[in-house]
Image (cartoon, rainbow, N blue to C red; front, side):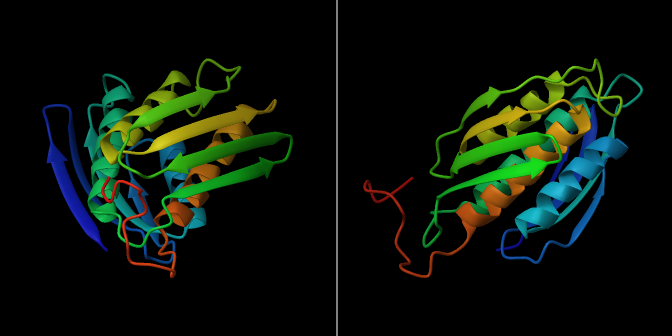
Length: 192
């Protein structure tokens, strides 16, 4: 299901498309090259299509651009999930990148929550304060209705961050994939 959303505030203007049944075609332009790199890796390795164009108040800082991208991507994921009929719902990924390791476990069952365990050593990553990565995933999860447990370790901040985004993408792609076993909603409640 291809979802297209747009959002415009005094701080950002975002146009985004998300297709969980895509092939990993990605075109991302947020004005923040490192963030573009992370989103591209997440989508490509997750096997979903993502286009995202953002104009943000980068003269202030990167916070609004990253946060609002999380809002719109989360809303798009939630729209793609819909009732959740036939999706796997749960998935996890463990991804190494040299000395770093990221683990992500997801439940796409309608309850937004984030457990985020890991720290970066640098004050910035690609000119982004590292706390914004946790904030991005928190915002995305709340808007998408995803419970996520993200854990990462390593020495190289770039490797840790990239492994985390790729692991999230892989887990998301698997959680949203059709199970092929049933077209039911994967919940004992019968609904998310």
